[in-house]
Image (cartoon, rainbow, N blue to C red; front, side, top):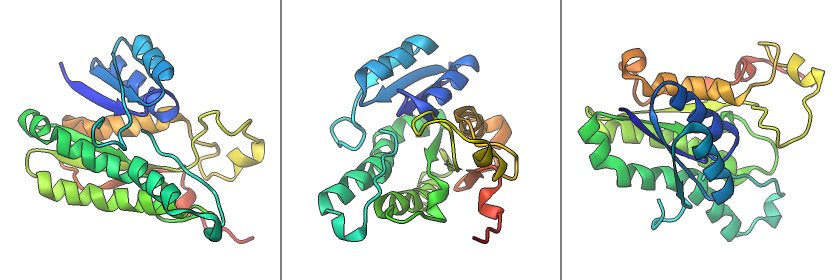
Length: 218
């Protein structure tokens, strides 16, 4: 049986990934700093739960963000976001290298379209997501030919955290709607499946409803 470890599995995109892989017959190991949410996902998909903060070298969660003017940022806040969003993937790759090589496995990192465009005040988040794109091809070249490493970069995904989605929000997307966690789960599943994406490594898959290709004048 194929095994997948999903970080940030307690909700949103991570939970959708856990559900998708479980339905495909994978053994799912869920990890999240939120113990209750992580346990709930694991129970829902019939998987295993591991409590952990992947920004910690000892524990080796999903992305975090803050919006602040540049003058209000502290180094500690910067370091927390970089550690959680970027360093965690390095630590996971290092910890899992032997098992990944032995199984000819694959890694899928979760970046963001913020790697290519930003809103004001998202310094650490944008930097961390851009770093994940670069880390993707660095890991791909370093772990070849045994391990494929790719990343998926979501655009606007409705995880329910930011209130109701308006009609105008859907309409501004070329595909006619805001993204859903299941969209990202499907993309990640494709990148994990060697029969479908076995000739892909070091690549970024942007899943954003076409927004990064849309010219916008205000």
